[in-house]
Structure formats: C-alpha cells, structure tokens
Length: 290
Figure 1 (tube, helix red, strand yellow):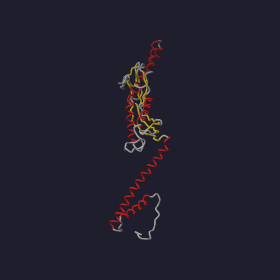
Figure 2: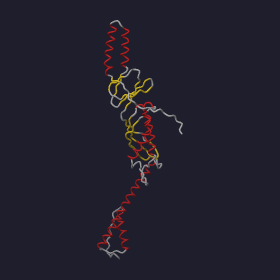
Figure 3: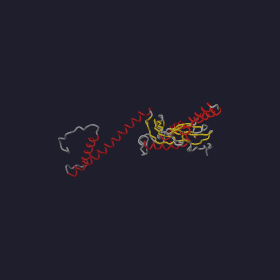
Figure 4: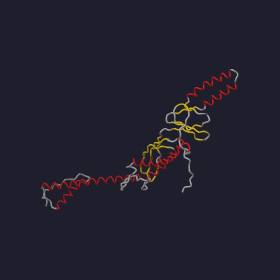
C-alpha cells in the first residue's frame, strides 16, 4: 500500500457576485457627497466618503467570454465567477483571473524507443482547456507546466506500446494507425491531467520518424520489402495468366502438349511475364519437337 498522503480535491462552485453597474453609479454620488461635505465644513464626513469611494473602486473587475475569476476570502476558496461583463465584489475578497479558452500545444520532438526497441522521433499536437478552475489553481502548483510535463510522459508511454511499422502479427503500428494511437494518447492524458481540472479535446501525432542513426538502414529495409511485395504480386499474376493460357489452348484444341512441353511453355511464359526487361523474341524455324 502506498504511503503517499491523500490530497484534498477541490471542486469548482459558482460565485454569486454582483454586476458592476450599481456600484459604478455610486461612484459619482460619493464624489459629489464628499465635495458637498468639504464645502460645508464637514471634513470628517468628506474623508469617510472619499475612503468609501476608494473601497468601492477596488472591487471592480471585468470578464470577457471564456474567462473566469476565482474568488477567495483570506485564503479560503469562495467560488468562481464565469459571468461576463463588469463585475464587483467587496474589496477584501481576493481575485485571480484564469483563462478557459482552448489551448493548442505542440510537444517537442522526443527520442523514444518503440515496442521493438527501435529509436524513433515523435511529437504530438494536443488541444486542451481548463474545465475546473478550482482544481487548476489549488490542486497543482502550476497547471500549465503540469500539463506540458504530462504530455511528454504520456507520449513516451504511448509510443512504447506500438511498433513504428512492419508488424507481421497484424497489430496496430505508429505509422499505419495514427488515429488509434492518438486516441490512446488522449485517454492516457485525460487520466494524468484529471487532477489539474483539465479537459483534453484532441490529440494528433505531428511528427514520426526513425532516429537519424538508423534511418538509412530502415529506409533500405522498407525499399527491400516494397520490392518483395511487388515481386509477389507479379508472380501471382503471372501464374494466373499462364494457367489461363494453358486452359484456353487445351479447351480450343489449338495444340496438344505433353507434360514436358507444358513445363517448357510455363517456364518461358514466366520468364517473359516476370522479367525486369522486355523479352527478346526467338523465331523457331523448325518443328515444335525438333
């Protein structure tokens, strides 16, 4: 059992602040009253009104769309105000603005080992946003730095579960199954960043390549495998064409061939169909059996 201490999870709740319209209208009234008090020989009242004017002024803040203010009272979380426009609270409330807008992050190119142990370079693009302001500000030290570190960790972990390419067992690979890899990365990141009140919207691989020290060797391997695959297709097609030709000759009784002549014809046809260069025709001036 782990001896790590339990962390008190924060939960966002709405803050019932008030609009700034009425406090804003009170400011000229307070100024006018203070001027009147000083003019009529009541400096104490005038000074009190000036102080009230300053205290009311300190309580204003404004919110744009997809922004929020986290409100605290002497270190205790009070709530989060997400309502846009001019807002106001009593001056002794602490306020901290936090952005709720979508953020787009492209990770650095990481050098990791794939499932087969081959060194590769990989990078990903992550789209994320703050979903719980209380968790983002109070449950982690710096939620932006926390997310960036978790992106690197999750990307390394995900890459280690897939081969770069050429998996003969039919398993998904990094190059051929980018959507599946991205979904696994997204699931992993969601679990890692849940403590920070962050939502992961999209994950995509942005860069994928063999590490420079093996890139040349792997390129030759890919070229060789491509040649072999093309050869297999050519041979399979050639065998079918030869089989069809022999069947047509037999059905139409164009010529009757024994097994030896059939073998010779099959050999010649395969050479013609599978050769890298065009075959040079040879005119037979004798008989078939000569």
